[in-house]
Length: 136
Image (cartoon, rainbow, N blue to C red):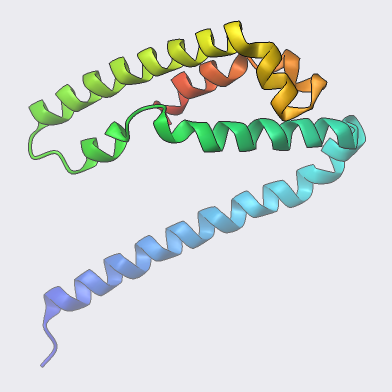
């Protein structure tokens, strides 16, 4: 009475869910075991600067690649996917350069807004992060 195709789909689905859960669990274990080492190496201020950097990057990365990475997944053909990758790469490069120039010319104003002088050393890594964010 059971359809074998449905059973195979369910097994594949369960297998995929198990892989995702296992990967997430292992990544959380790595964080759990590495945290005591990192807290010995770095001061709490460094974690604050990292949190600020990540939050700035997260908010501004929305515009970094025009979401072309999502469009590649739903492309109808390999040719269309290759074109989307090229367009996404160009958009990411242009946006990264634009952010670099904005940071270069308006660094003082941006630091006044953020009110964290320790971030000055890391500001120019934000456009580099955008560029490599595309290749995730």
